[in-house]
Image (tube, one colour):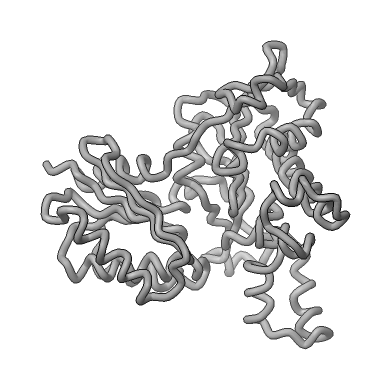
Length: 351
């Protein structure tokens, strides 16, 4: 069986690719400021010309929202149809991903879709159902969760009760028991949960009809605002970058940073209760892996759990940053979503 895999990680304004041979990465690139379909397909065309697609086992795609799909799947017309039906739940990601899948379908290259939602499919019903009339759960209105590829990757090999914190532009926290997702902060869409770079996170649903009625704002405009103009950017009015906010003397910038730390802390505390304790807390993704000050601020709230941080190790972004006498192990683990996608894609091809 061929083992070369081209991993496509397509976002709303970027196209990343990684090329794996026998499980080892031999090429990658990241194209930013890719906003239109034409720009996106021009980039993908260049990637396809650079890589020998005739020698590929498959092209593997990171797909953010897969609805109720439980694992990596080979791409066919039926799967593509399912993806189109759920695309409106994560339009910034799923629609560009579908465009790239369609491009490779025309080239008749085998493809596999790997889903951010798949890891969370086995969450207990009490975690994934909303307090709505039950008929809506049966129609698919429920918590799906995201960043599953990352949460699964960084929790591999960790036993017991684990809380993983994927902190980047998008942020989520997941409660894991013996390798299985028990609950996660993102929900029906990636908007629920923590205060993020430009996303509001959770808020009272009544805010939306109130704004429609009294602020005369359309639902489409509100959706745009909640996803692109809220969170750290919305509160500070200046930046979505935590580094800028923490280095500022502006009160709103500092408030935005504090709201972020507070929202992550509350989520960790809630999941510690859901798990009836916690053995390991993991930080990952851009902020989680690289910003010692953010970790320090978040962990300072968790002394009641017996968390003790080794300051020197934290500054070095060491793999284990907790003190020896800490009751909870705290780790920094670099996520590698592309590698995880490549491995899942090969498994799907073997099946």
